[in-house]
Length: 215
Image (cartoon, rainbow, N blue to C red; front, side, top):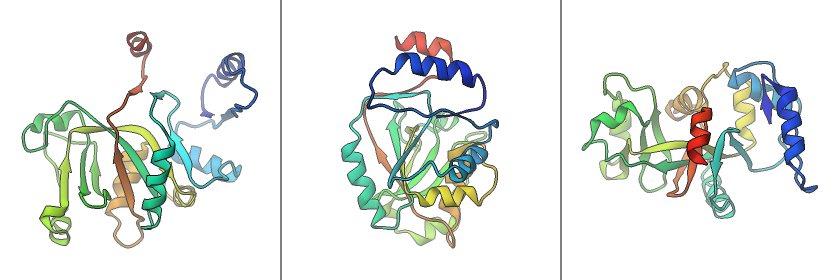
């Protein structure tokens, strides 16, 4: 667990709650709110030693089974996949039927056969989406699927190669908008990123009111 504020209080709370001796949680003070700095800290401390590893935020709650998703990651890895992002469908309609959904959910273009992410953008302004023209030319139209009816779960199954890419790159603040957005557009050096859809419980707690509503 990587933190940048209230580290002592978080450590005391976690230690008072976790009683299972088989469960070990390490807490580190990163001292920065930059996602890039946090990943560089992970790399410098050699904290990631498994393939795959799970990248998630501490305020994400879910109850899905992990093992079947690991099998999907292994299948994507055979296609040189860097990571598999888990998405949760929302109540929004498709992009063509409900353009107003662009204001709330990211726009994602995927290969409908392989589920490789070809375009990702969650910074939509005025309901306009700027999908690269060459992307539409490279793929058979029937293989393209454009979505604005699901949201990120902040849960990704990743290859250790992701750490190397992030450590040598810019100071990313937002993982999806800064890294995923650029990686899927980089046709020369970018690695394939895949997605998987889950109709299960996901909840991101961003305030005390969210937590009260969940309980």
